[in-house]
Image 1: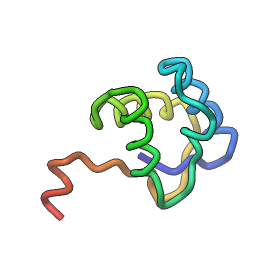
Image 2: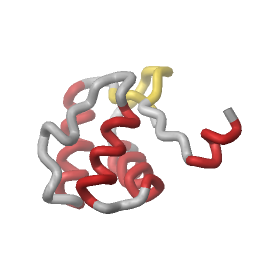
Image 3: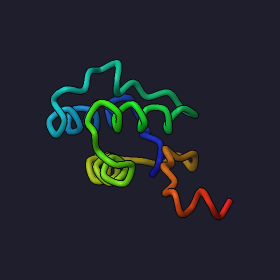
Length: 84
C-alpha cells in the first residue's frame, strides 16, 4: 500500500476509517512513516478486527486518493512475513 502523497490524502482515508470504526480517534490514526505496523496494531486492538480486515479497509479507502511515493505504507500478511 503506497504512502499518501499528501496530508490531504491521508485525511480522506482517516475520515473513511473513522466512518467504518467510529471508536477510532485522530491519535489512533496518526500516520508516522515507518510506524505503519504500530498504527495497524492499534486499530486491530481498538476495533477487535483481524489484521487482514484492517489492511483491507486501509487499502480500500486509500485507493480513491492519489499516491506516488515508492515508500509504502506496507502491511505484510502473516504469510509474507514468514517468507522474509
